[in-house]
Image (cartoon, rainbow, N blue to C red):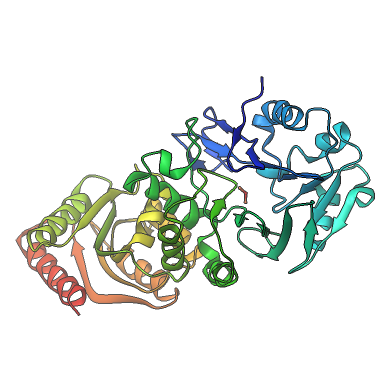
Length: 400
Ligand code: FEO
C-alpha cells in the first residue's frame, strides 16, 4: 500500500526507508537505517525528482501510482545516477513508457552503462541554468559535479523555492513518519549522522561542495529536499553553515580527538592518561579504540575536532593496522588543517611514530607536533613525563 506525505501544496514525498540494510554502499554501518527520498510535483505536467534504491522500489511504485491516479507521468528528473537513487529508473520507463528522463550529458552516458533499454529515446538533456516549465512550476537545473559523483546536478523549483539538493544535506537514518527535520528531535546525535554522511560520502570533495553552496547562495531557498534523511523547511541556514565548515575542512570543535590502536593495553593506557591530563585542564576530549569503532565514525570525529592524537602500537614494523587504515582513510578524504600529536609503542623496535608522521606529513596542512611519546610495552614514570610534554604542546597549540 502506498505511503506518501505532502510537503507543499504541489509536492509530495514518494520515497521510502530501509531499516534492514547493515552497510550502506556495503561499507558504512547504518544502525538507524536509511531513507531513499523521491518527490512528485503535481502540475499541468507531472514530474518525479529521482527514483529510489531497489530495496524500497515496490513501495515507490505504489506511491507513484497513487500520486498519478489516472494521469500520465511526463518527466523524471535524474539529479544523481548512483543506484541508491536510479535503480528504479528502468522499471519506471517500462511502466510509464511516455516518460522523458530529464538529465545532463554525463548522466546520459551513465544511463547507457547501467541500463539496456533505448535511453536516448527517452532523454531530454539539460545543462547549467536550463529551465523546464511544468505549468505553474518552473524547474531550474544547476550542475554539482562530485557532490557526490561527476554527473550530479540539483534542481530548483523557482515557484515554491524548493531546492532538490541530491546527496547534499543528506543524513543517515530512516524517517519516522515525520519527514521534516523540525518535526523530529534533530539534535547533536542527528547532526553527528549528517556529519558522518557528509564526511564519508562527499568529504573528499570540499572544493566542489563550496562551489555548490556558492550557487545555492544566489537562490531563495524555503525548503531543502535531499535524497536521504529529513526535509528542511526551518533552520536551513544552520545546516548550510555546517556544510560551509565541513567543505572548508574547518574544525567545529576546539578540542582533542584521541584514537588508539592497542594490542595488550599499554598504548590504550597512554592515550587515556593523556586524555585525563587534557580534560583536567578543561579541554574537550574524545577517546576511541580504532579496533572497535567503525572507521566511518572516526573519520567524522576527525573532521569535527581541531586537534588529533594518534596512538599506535608497532605491528610488523609498521603502524598497527586499524590506525593505519584510519590514517589512510583520512588522507583519502583529504582532511587538512589539523594539529596532530603522536604516541607510539614498540616492545623492541618502535616504528609506528615515524610511519604515522610520514603519512600525516604527506597530507595537506597538517601540523605534526615534534614530541612523539614512546611507550616501550607499558607506561612507566618516564613515559608520564613525555605525556606531560605532549599535553603541554597541545595546550599551547589550543590556546594559540
Ligand atoms: Fe545517495 Fe551518491 O548516492
